[in-house]
Amino acid sequence: MIRAEGVEAMEFPELSDRYGVSGVPQTTINDGAGTVVGAVPEQNLLAEIMRASKK
Amino acid sequence: MADVLLNEQTTGQIREAFSNLKEPVVILFFGSRENCDYCDDTRQLLEEVTALDDRLTLKVHDIDTDTEIAKLYRVDKTPGIVIAAMDGDQISDFGIQYSGIPSGHEFSTLIQAILLASGRDSGLTPQTREFLKNLQSPLHLQVFVTPT
Image (cartoon, rainbow over all chains, first blue to last red; front, side):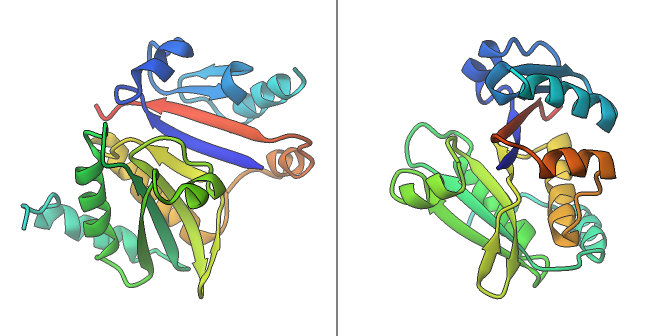
């Protein structure tokens, strides 16, 4: 149900471009439904996941 | 034989980190023969890492021939790495994966992921666990990183 994938941005430039990755780490939720830039506290990530899940 | 990737100092540090391993872990490597610049190095790196502790197992797959296994673990890139629990012959997938070569800073990410899977505990807060337990549709997080 849950998949957490680390992606080496430079090896997969097409994917990085698609999600507009300009700095790392950057987290894309469900193919672009949500985005988190930088390393954030767990509760902030959870809030964005909740927001993205409602789409 | 090709030169080793991990020097003695690094293997010493990894062994020390692996003294905290709890339960067995399996690493599934997915490579491809074509269009994969980092597959050989990644596989060799994983061979060297998993050789450092008896609780670690490496399984090597080809994404083009082992298509059913790749599909089962939802691996769609090479090199693709799945870090999962191993209990006897039983593999339990936590959905933890890494796409690309885990070098530089990302090497410690690999070691941390192995330790996390070995502990069988996400370390997440009760609030996060409650939300995830009630998920109605699949959740895919992709954390973009660079080795430097």
